[in-house]
Each structure stands twice: as structure tokens, then as C-alpha cells.
Length: 119
Length: 106
Image 1 (cartoon, rainbow over the protein chains, first blue to last red):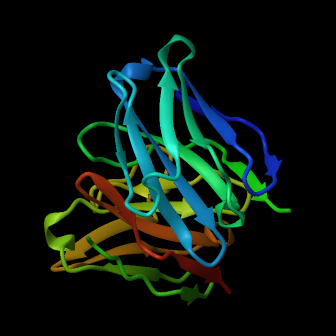
Image 2 (image 1 turned 180 degrees about the horizontal axis):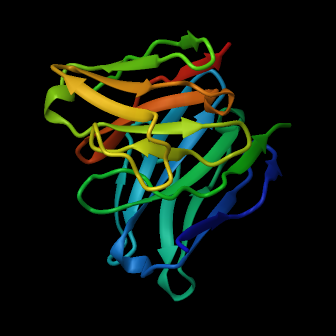
């Protein structure tokens, strides 16, 4: 079974750093891209970035470029989303999703990681 | 970049047909995908490439596209279909989601 399992909920203070993870199983990790998507109440789903695990090539949404970094560790079939300095506005539910390089649909998705940033 | 417009909410009586639209200036040349999002659950693709239904998705879910509007149709809506629905396209190299539609089954 193809699965993406994300790390648990996080509570952080503004200015702190954070890395959340998305572990893939049930398929060859390097043959599909991973995207990160944020859900904020009242704003809906927002696409943040994608990474090709085969060569670590990335694309970022202009809205998130420079504020987050996506990466992978092929040795453990895991993708990461990280912040070096969190803001309160980063509070949200973050999903990872698998898709192919043909710009197709996301399937499956991880279960989501809730990030709360509050002083 | 592409922007996708969805109605904020759609209501449908139990067993009736719900239609959720997704409009955008470039939808005619894009592949449109639809996702169902329920509280506490991961999003699920219910229609891909306008009209294709993944295995495991009930036949009551269907999709279509005409001009610059794509439509998700739920025929014979069930209580379990109550959820938020999002359309999505790629505006290479970025993905774009519609604002989401809350489906209420009365």
C-alpha cells in the first residue's frame, strides 16, 4: 500500500526553527515528486513547493519562496519541510502529497501535521 | 498566474444532485483535478483529469469541463459526501487550488 506518514503536531514560538517530515512507503521514492500544501481556515489549500527526490530539484510558490525549504533524504524515503524562523502566520495544517512529474494529481496525501506558532 | 473561482458553499438535499463549479481563464487548456477534504482527514482525489474517477470512489462522483469551467457533479448525494471540495490545476511549475466549496447535505 502506498502511504505517506507525516510527523506529529508541533507547538513553537515565533522565531524558532522547525522541520516536519513525510515518510513514504509502498513505492520507489525517487519515481514520484512530493509537494507540500498548507491548509489555513478561511484560506483553503495553498500549494507551497515541490521536490523531485531523484535529484532534489525544487520549485516554490512565490508566496513561500525564501521562507521555507523542502528537502529529501533518499536513504530513509522521507521528505522534509523546514523553517528557520517561524512566524505566527505559519500556523496551519501542512500536508504532503505525491504526484508524478507530468503535473498530475496528488495521490496519496499524508495525514497532515498541525503547526501552531504562538508566543 | 491562474486563479480558480469556486462557490463558497453549495447545499443539496439528501439524494439529490450537487454541482460544484471551478472557473478560470486558462482552465480550457489545463487538466483539472478535484479533491474532497473532511475534517481530520487527508485530502482524497475524487476526480482526475476532468472526468476520471479513481478506484474506490463511488460512481455518483463525476466531472466535466466546458470552456473555462470545470464541474464536479455528485449524483444522489449522501450524508457522507458533506465535505470541502477543491479543484486544482498546474500553472507550470506551480500548482493552483481553487478557494474550496463547502458542500452541505440537507
